[in-house]
Length: 290
Image (cartoon, rainbow, N blue to C red):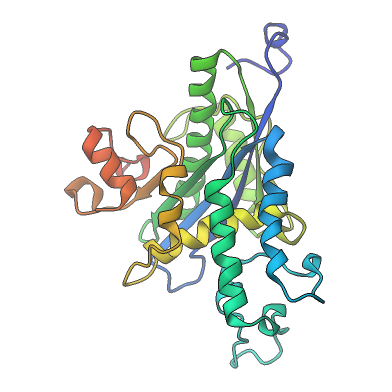
């Protein structure tokens, strides 16, 4: 692995990709855990943020967009749970249903249609959908996503000769300490997949209320949960993003579905089908011992 302080690295381009992540399916009844988000080059981070924030222009005239977090599940269903009367009401309760769904649709449209400043540095989506029957489902999800992000940066370096570095930001939660510990280990030694070679540091955690791009990651994660987490899959939201996940050679590298049914060709989701059709090896979590 080439060290950041290695003199041989002095001629490298020091541009940066940032991968913004969020989780979904963390509640006990979910059959899957999802870690997902958007990787964007530093040149595009501000512009994508502005494009995504722009969907709040649909709010009623007196509303201040800065008060509204773009949290997909809450926008869709903001009604307070009567079993939790002390919970603070959602600010989205005061927004008409039609307006809320218009904002949801505009958010996914912004994520799908944003054009990058330089086509050499495309924005790309990444996600791992892991069945919660695996006891280490969170660790598997993190390992898959970090390595697939790292592999995209490696692939870009081989194709263009320009080495981009990567940084990861996740919505703040209780996993921070153990995720950072495991990521640091993966930067030094191989886990199930290999060594992380293009990450400048361990993942950082921040408050999603302060970052529109973390809120964009929430949209990606929630859209996937609606498809993978419900008894009757709802692909209305995820289907707008399928072809925006990192891919190469007909394989959807950016999205992996870790399911025990993969080896039996029982899954017809876009990620599993792309690997089956290309004869690529199974996702790491499935190939590993149960």
